[in-house]
Length: 301
Image (cartoon, rainbow, N blue to C red; front, side, top):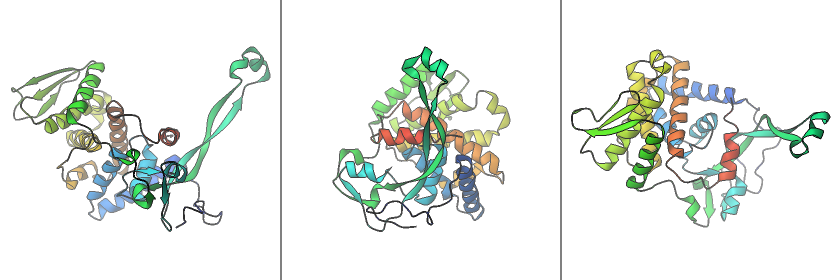
């Protein structure tokens, strides 16, 4: 379905059927598995790249963006782009995501009389189809808001170290763990001394991922291969988000899928959520704060 910036909303007959967040995730996982079964292991890397770029979006909407436009780097709605002095080019196809429908729940009269300050509260009542566009689908003013997240490795390293410290995790550097680049011991991380800044940053994220995901109950429900692949995927997502070049082969991530759709979906979701937590400690507030905060409400379910 194509439509122009002057007519952004599909007609009632064109409007796709509304789906729940769970239905969107299930449909995207099914599509991903079909690609993996067809030998397209790079599809997983495309999803992880989307996670690195859109970590403030919900899991379901990240899957939607990655499926519909794998090369997207920066998305926003028509209004947001117009505010930045850019217009969606004629004939461009919108990327469908789920946006929350927020209602107001009124308090019973007797409760409202007791507390006049907070008589009503906003509640999530459902979702609607909404459309965003990638920056490549727009034209107009070049602005600082359009820059992708980059950032000096040194600054991000300091922020990462501060985050690790806040988690109560002991960190030390040593040569005794060679040839391993890093080790996670549950509340303690060892990093091999002498790595380049980029390597060290990626290793820190990898071991932090183990601390966050694999030193509790989840360890007993996963294999070592899956745990290592999840940690490496999180390192890929976070490193790419801060502008580092990554050399991990697409085929490496196929290890998350061995014919089990539910386990793949679980791994993708924990990778996305862990990456988002780490990136929130590293990067500035998003440019499209209002839209992306609204989108977070759609994480939903």
